[in-house]
Each structure stands twice: as C-alpha cells, then as structure tokens.
Length: 64
Image 1 (cartoon, rainbow, N blue to C red):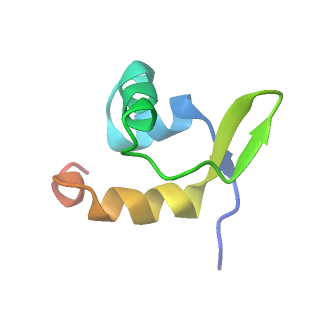
Image 2: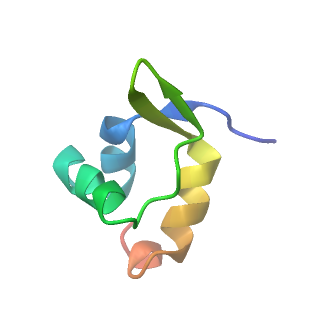
C-alpha cells in the first residue's frame, strides 16, 4: 500500500537522522529527488519517495 503522506525537510531529517539544514543542502546540491509537491513555495515529498531514495543513497541502508 502506498504511503502518500507528505514530508517536509523536518520529517525527512528525522527519518534519515540528520538536521533539517543537511536535507536542505542535499536538495541544493541535487542529492534529493525533485519534490512531489510545492505548496506556498515549500517543497514536500511523499514518504515513499524518500524511503526509496534513502534506501539507495550511500550509507542509507546502514543508518536505521
């Protein structure tokens, strides 16, 4: 079942155990997928999008 819960920088940071500023830096440098939604100028990603990205990022599988 798909998880279409929208995550902001804060939720992504909690999921991958880093600070929100680190996630912002990942996006700035092109290391984060494109947002699934931008609302009011703020980016959001589906939880499933971030889980898939996190499983493939270097070191991502060993952090949880």
